Amino acid sequence: MKVLFCGLKYEYGKPGAGLSFEYQNFYEVLKAMDGVEAAGFFIDEQIARVGRDAMNAQLIKMVEDTKPDLLFCFLFTEELKKETIGHITKKTSTKTFNWFADDHWRLPVYSRFWAPLFTLVGTTDSKAPARYAKYGIKNVIKTQWGVNTKLYHPAGQKEGGLDITFVGLNYSVREKYIKFLKNAGLPVTAFGSGWETGRIPKERTSIIWGSSKINLNFSESYAYGPKFWLRSAARLFIKKELGHYKSDVANVYGNARSALMMRHPQIKSRVFEIPACGGFLITGDADNLRDYFENGKEIVIFKDQKDLAEKCRYYLAHKQERENIARAGYERTVKEHTYEQRFRKIFRDLGLM
Image 1 (spheres, helix red, strand yellow):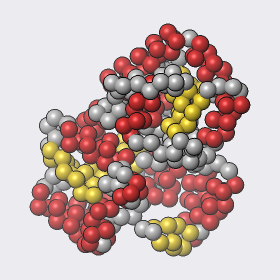
Image 2: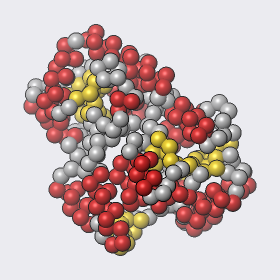
Image 3: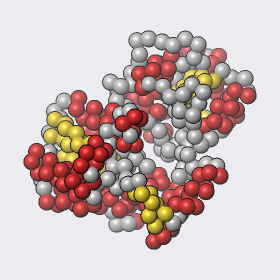
Image 4: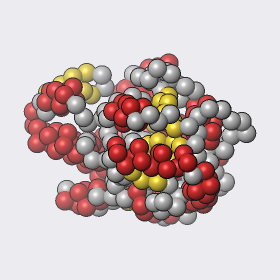
C-alpha cells in the first residue's frame, strides 16, 4: 500500500524548533510499517521554497503522478487549500484522511470546515463524532494518540536522583501543581521550556521517564488565567491565518464556543509515551482515559492538588506497587496503543486492508 504523508516537517513550521511531532510519530512510523510504502510531502518546506499556491499545485501533481492509495494529512492551519483536498478526494483514485488533533476546542472554528473534504477524518475527542453529526458530517472515526516505540522505549541507561518529574512546557496550571508539590516538601523536578532546566533533547526525555520513580502528566489545556481570556476576547473577532490577522466577525459564536471548550481536560500523548519507556505515571483525569488504562493497576489518576501530593507520598514509599503498575502500563501500551496499531485500524476503516 502506498501512502503519501502530508504535514509539517518542523515544529510549528520552524526549522530551529526541531522535527515536528507528526514527522517523528506519524511519518516515521508509516515509513517503518510492513506492507506500507510511505513518502512525505512537507508543506512548511514547500511553502518556504515556492510559496503556498505553487505548493498546492505540487501536491496535486505528486498525487496524480505517483497515485498513492492514501493521502494521510495532519493539517495545522490553512496551508492547504480546500480546493486542493477536494480535487484529490473527488477527481483522483487516492483516498484522503486527516487526523484532527484538537477537536476538544477546534471543531467549531476549524475542523468542521475541513472534514467534509476528506474521504475520512479521525478525532481524539470521544464527544466529537456526535458534534460533527450535528453539522451533518458523518465521515468521522474516533482514534487516539499512541506511541512510536522506536522513539519511546525503555532506555539502556539511567539518570540517578530522579524522584518525581514532569517533562513538558510550563503553561496553564502546571506551575501551580509543581509549586504545590514543592511546598508540600516533595522532591519534584520539571524539565522543558519555561522551567529552570530549559528544553531537553528527545533522547533524554525517554531516559528521564524510565529513570524517575514517579512521572507526572497534567491534562489541562493552556486555557487558564487572565492572559488567556484577554487573547480569547480578541479571537472572538479576529483570526490568524498563515501568519496574517483577518476579521472573523461572522464566526463570533463559534469562536466563543471554542474558547469555552479549551478548558476541557484531554488525553496527552505523554500518557502513552511514559508507560512505553517503562515509567510509572500519575496523571490528571481526562476524556475517556479509562478506556485505555486501568486506574490503579496500569497508571494512577489524581483528582486535585491534595490528592496528587498524597499519591506521590504513597508511591514513593511503596516501590513494589509502583514497579508493578509501571510494568503493567508498559505491557498494555506496547500491546494496544502503538501508532502502528492506530494506523492499521484507520486503513481498515478506509477499506485499504
